[in-house]
Length: 336
Picture 1 (cartoon, rainbow, N blue to C red):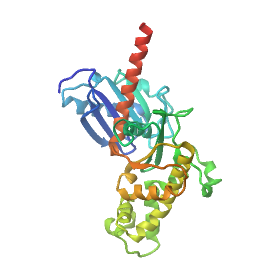
Picture 2: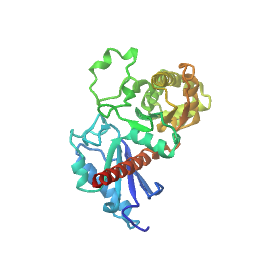
Picture 3: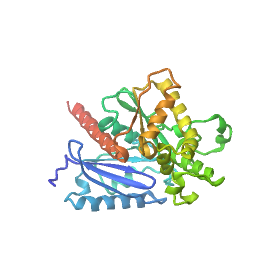
């Protein structure tokens, strides 16, 4: 691989269980990819030491060094502002409220852009995926939890505190007033508790605990209730399994209602559904589309995300490329 510092950027999607690293050339085309289990812990210095060690091993095999990268974008499962570098509302990372940018500088001194993982995924889908060419987009990811991001007039909308899109915290009538004692970032929000992949798994395990039921879900779980996974339920539902369809009724209805409300408020051109649940089959997206279309008078267009679990890394590359271009333009205007 011919190395030129201006040619390569890195996009890193840090997840609660897996971290995905993508190295792209000057055109944004991936040239290296690697996924590995995320290191858990309470010390961000240890985490970034581990992360850059993994990156060094990945890059060195191709004759590329970390310091030769022209920029790095990183997405995290929580609220983080690039201007402050403080990660909050991130249950998977019990770090102190500390600016992580000086820690990153110990390992890499080039341009860095930090953001929420769903914001990064929305950037990725807007750049290379299902939302290309759209100026008003709502992206919702349905996985372990629920996240969303909003692109308005072609740009990511972050909100006053960089915390826009936290739809998992939407309040449901049944959750009021019990939800008010919940501290931010400690657990799932009310909407997540009925729509996420985690909730689907919980509903399914409770369903089969009430007695013997004939279902392909149990076959996929090896006959053990404790081994039932959300994807077992979704696969069975897509095949018409009656138990699976019953389990999915509440998650699908609540997601349809949430999307309909968001569309009535925001009037996006497109709603993109991503994450492990939405990406598992066309069944989920088709059902949400069918149900939500009945609940809003506004035009409703829902599509499945195209980039899968690579969307966050692609978005991180797009974000740092945009930051580098903006910084270059700013320096150019100051020199005139």
